[in-house]
Length: 504
Image (cartoon, rainbow, N blue to C red):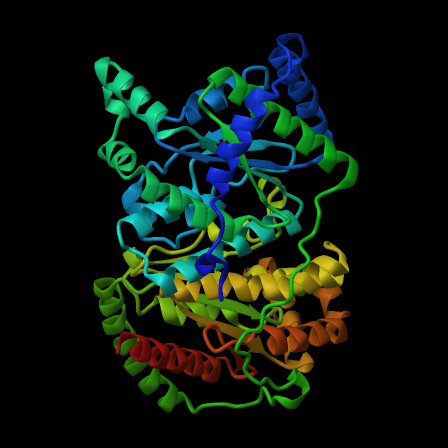
């Protein structure tokens, strides 16, 4: 039975009982924590966050009119505004609908040493979808898996994640909604959903409870704050944040201890058993190229109409012919409906975030095609071999990448991954041709020659990559490319076949 379906005690009702008991045993006023001192402490910790390159995410959820915005405002009062952001609901709801569920949240994660406060986020969105009957039990179960995976990936990659629910009573919520509506300058802040939520308070409480119980984990537990007193709530949130940051700075971020997920893997051959010498005659090539490009153009129109997103991932040996291969695909497409992303070494602002961030931010809208020339597989290839990440990080990446691609597949994306394969002699021939041709010299670098010396290490890494990440929903295809024309036709045929299957 999944966590979302378990019959559990009410976290919020238990919290209410604890609050009542706490009021009876409350501390005298002189023993209460000093809010200003806590804020100053948080401000001093902000400098340490920068020094230790610790990114912090605070997810603040709660009832409508519970005072989330004001609570954030009080908490950040003493902070340097250059090093935090407050993320509210996306500015382009239409664009968000055309991207995967987690896109808008992954898009806003902070750089190392900075804080991001989410004024409501993935939990509220999930509960709203349940209330609108947009998620059935199966879809809700999948959503919970996505959330827990997202949060685990963040913490595993060094993010401090603090999740807080701001709780108020039904009576207090109604009182605040009435007060807001009585003032014409604040009436706009009361939505139809806020009133509906108060009217159906008990049912909404159960929905919040189920979602919180299913997503409260050892690495990202929920914290409930009593929002009936705004000053006390601000003091408690600041104290929570101070404690969490101090603990993270001293002890690091705890890694999730979970059983590795199983994925529907496909069998793959090691590269040494694949002959890259397949070829095609010139006449046959011209005929098939025209036919396949015409068909691909027709399918592109259908993709747009049916809003099916496509993700194409290219990896391969240097000088294998990825660029020419990509051009034969894009030459058949409407230029308004695709984008090619050449992926180089990460820029400083990219390197300062989760390594998948720069790929989440480049995902296509539904009905569009994204082509990646080099990909997220750099984590288990160049970063592994060159020592740009730890062994623990690249070994963990196989699971993280499979989860990333599963998220895209569940969104509805067609995913194809191509390893463009040549032998070592062909690579040498092409390197020398580039070196000796002025118009092509920009294509060859000292790094290319240096990487060639590490061919055995790369071959071993590629074999493991194919073995561990070629799945039913995101398969790898080895494209024999000693003959570039043969490689182009094979790739086009695979793409056409996959799109025809998806569009049925």
